[in-house]
Amino acid sequence: MQFFNENTIYFLVVDRFLNSDPSNDNCRNPEAFDAAQKDWCKYWGGDLAGVIDKLDYLKELGASALWLTPLFDQADGLVDVEGRGIAAYHGYWAKDFKRMDEHLVSNQEDIRVFASHDTILDRLAAAMHKRDMKLILDIVCNHSSPAHRPDDGGKVTKGELYDDGELLTSYENDTLGWYHRNGGVTDWNSAWQVENEELCGLADFNESKIGYRTYIKEAMKLWVDKGADGLRVDTVKHMPLWFWQEFVSDMLFHKPELFIFGEWFQGGANDPFSVHFANASGMGMLDFSLQNAIESCLAKNADGGFCCIEAVFKKDALFNNCHELVTFVDNHDMPRFLSVGGTPERLRLALGLIMTCRGTPCIYYGTEQYLHNDTNGGADPYNRPMMERWDATTPAFKLIKALAQVRKENLAVQRGSQRVKSASENIYAYTRVYLDNCCLAVFNKGPASEVTLENIELPDGVYTDVLTQSPARVSGGKIEKLRLEKDSLLVFSRAAAPSDGHTLIVTFMLNGFKTAWGQKIFVTGNCPELGNWDLDRAFPLEYINDNLWMEGLPLKHPPGASVAYKFIVKSPDGAVLYEDRPAHVRRLPPEGGLLLKHAWV
Image (cartoon, rainbow, N blue to C red; front, side):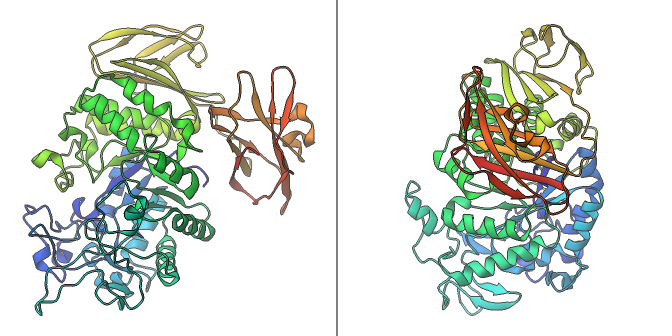
């Protein structure tokens, strides 16, 4: 699996999704559980059996990948934060990275998740893969737990860390030197403080210790071996880049097809440090810049309207691969769209945008049911209500379902270039284009109106909006007087026929050469599909943006074969520019997909 973009991710807070087994609610700390679901900082009972119970609902929604909050064994009891007790219901305060939290399992023997091949996690992974759904596990490498309330003996514990039940170290008695002891961050503009000091009182790991790195990487590989298809990595800005480069390399060496993306809070195209991280770390990244623009435009009616969103897309070439961004409208760290001024109609536009633009869309649990609580403006923890219903008839549900299918079928939505056709205060239109595939998305957040769109890459003919079934005619690359109702969107999709069953698809990806007008990039090499070094028969790549050319090529080859190739640039006048290096040589796998990433030399 080389591309994740055909998927629609569904992100759920396990404790707040479905309580399938009330017998595991109290576990060892009844004070940390609230059966009435009134104390937003305690466990409410959701568990992994509840996720299994609703897999068919999620499959119908179009969710082909599930991102679950961390499953690690959590710090017990309550933590003091400004005088009130908070439980680790969210999963980000681990004490044992090699055990599962007792609140999530029905059989308490499943806590020792790696001692058996028939735990609740094994059954979840099997049930998901049977439905062709992918499992994304949320992981934490930066920290363990904050300080607990004093126990009966008056002792305050912080950062106790275990290895399958065996105590390794703690913040108070850190004989291994696995924790930083630099206090909390006071200057958020200081990269050193952000990487080496504590976030919100959380015991901060000292990644310079090889013992810690070995422990955390071994633990994460064990979780991957349980059937994980992807990892969402928490708090990546709080650890140095070299650590993530080592970590990602080890994870991909262990499972090459693993999809990894990180949370650089408020990162994206508007944060140059996060852009560098995305380009150098080896993992994708959550796109906060786009989320902020969507919220500003569609929920808060900021000046500039859709131009705010287009300004983010114009920066896509800053990334080596903008398709590795994960897009979202809501998440667990910020108020939901409906709590900051958004309406159900505008939410429809926001969802339509992330479902049709570049990157991989992520739906926060309950968004399809308009789930929200506006207490304190909907800020944490009120952005984490208990899931209340599973209605497959809401407009948001039906929109996600329809557009998830478009994304699954249309390569232009998955990996194409994005070409704006109209961008103004109230109206926004773009096409996604890749080879013979095209998708046109049109948005209107103003009053009912008409718009004429030109230079549409769809062949002449009549097309049907996948959401409303209304028709539109393309003639000479133009759609005349397209009717747009108030707060509406239209999506027209043309997907080419799928590949005819070649055993290996090699995708060539090139960054770092900004072509002039008329220039095109090709691959030439030592096989017939690459022209056998004949430049007239070289394989053309597809323009995605100013920093990315890409295309997939079926290759027929004998077992164990290798391919040699180079990138060239052809100009309209016939001039040819070669990469200034010897040919790349790559051994080919027997089947499946192979993604070859390169920067121009």
